[in-house]
Amino acid sequence: MKKPNSTLRLLTGPKDLQMSLVFDGFLVGIGAGLVSVAYRWMLGKAETFLFAASEYLQKKPVMTLGWILLIVMLAVICTRLLKWEPMISGSGIPQVSGEIKGYLDIKPIRTILGKMIGGTLCIIGGMSLGREGPSVQLGAMAGKLISRLRGENQTREKALLTCGAGAGLAAAFNAPLSGVMFALEEIHKNFNSYILVCAMVGAATADFISKGFFGVSTVFHYELYNTFPLRYYWVLVLLGILLGVLGAFYNKMMLFGQDFFKKISFLPQEIRLMIPFLMGLILMFFLPETLAGGHAMVGLLEDGKTAASMLLLLLLVKFVFSVFCFGSGAPGGIFFPLLVLGSYVGAIMGKGVILAFHLPNGLIYNFIILAMAGFFAAIVRAPITGVVLIAEMTGTLDHLISLLLVSVVAYVVANELRSAPIYESLLDRILLKNKGVAQVEYPEDKILANFFVQCGSKLENKRIRDIEGWPKNCLIVSIKRGEKELIPRGLTRLLPSDMLIVLLDSKDLASVNEIISDLCQNKEENGREGERTI
Image (tube, one colour):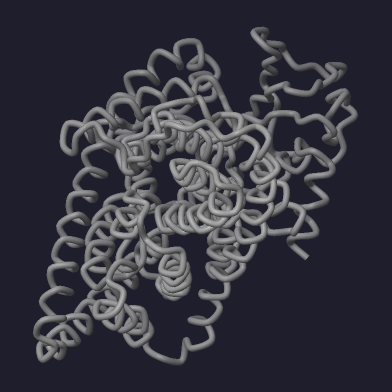
């Protein structure tokens, strides 16, 4: 039985919201952790089977026909799953972001089942797809399912979606802080203190469950013994510029992959999915390291002995293969593969710099982790998450300055190249493909939404009564200014960093969110978004 969602209950609820969200975060952390752990285990078994099959086919190529029959069956099943639940396509992160913004209303049980089965089958077929993005969606759907079972209102459901998304990433990477930062920086798009507490509890709980199953080690194992010499920091600036350019190119090519499969839409979807499956079959004989998420490629970097020419070949093949796998719409993400690609860019450049300037060989690992953070910042445009993720993976903050330098330079270069963040671009395409998706039929509930007034925005230093373009179907019910909570009046002047708590009908969330976000956003950033859209 759903709890009544009166306006009075919404406005009085926040008094104990933070403490109640601690308990909810714990529940969501358990649910998201178990789902993500199950998915991670399934993909691990699928990857083991894939590489065993690769060795077997290399010894007995006559059995290739049997493998072709298998991938035909995999393509048929994946196609049926995509038709049964279209929201399992791709990584799932744009879908979660769309739900938070009010554009989508995803079915949690169908998505969890479809994503887990479809993602596992794609890895069995060798597709270059990661588990981390899908884990974000699985965690978010676990949070939504728990919210629905508890009869929560839409305001709390959005909080639990964010919490579940962070918990899913924490379980996938064994990196709880990264899960929290990604949920707030990329999914929720603000650092609301209530959401922060919930996300922290959820991520810590999911991480504990994950470590109970898989151990305490992180996905990447790079121990850094050398501090990057200050006199060569100009090299890091060049690395950041290179990563910014490559990140913009990566985003463009990922969208190109989707366009390619759209152009051949006259072919049945089963045939289109066969393209990356057949590419995977070829690579099973020649470069099996590039199959699946890329864990085998990570292993080649850990010994530091692989030649630069081989690294370059693996980088190029992995990149092209990833474009076709993700472009096909198969269930799977780009999160881990893009980190692998970034690490290879860093390794190749590192080998050249170390050889040219006679630097210690151990610095190769510095280049690897710095390039991962910078490439992530350029592609996803979430530099804080990238820096925290790398810090957790290496277990030290001693390299924070170099991480920040590379990430910021890559971020700025990609931004100046007018490259939109990849997940925002993918969400735009989902909404364009499903033109009626913004008209989600939510229950007739009220919802509280939070918006931060940015420096240089249209609302900065404006009195509430003088705001132009404010949507008619919503009301500012409170303003948080630091630790103070103000009652809004017509003469109240809005200042930068004010958090506006807005009451609206849940059915209007998508349209109101777009209008108020535009008013709160920095004017210069707003102009850039307009240029990208054009």
